[in-house]
Image (tube, rainbow, N blue to C red; front, side, top):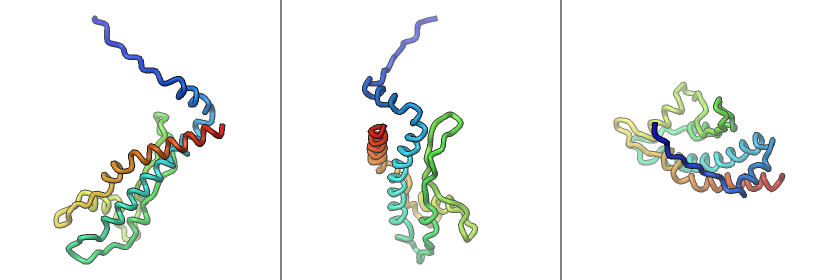
Length: 146
């Protein structure tokens, strides 16, 4: 048996010291930080969806505003692996019995006779840096309160 290569990556001491200050507050602070980032993504998705809905349709738009109003952000929740997550998504069900997720999927990817109008994928790309910046700023703010 041969020796495997070993790589040891250490976090900067300054970062570790700042994180260690969180202590038992980490379970309070992490959800706040994630929710701030989620809001940035949510606003970008909403903006993109507003632009995509009812524009350039072959037939008169039948938009009711229900898809856009159902778009929201979940609370930060911890999964079974201990990771915190927030989700941007659509509340269900619609008043007409259709699925918001299905309608969003059709807008995003298109269907026969309806071209795709991607709004989710571009929002993810465009909001990555502003989301990260907002989360870093919130983390700095919360650490400063300790």
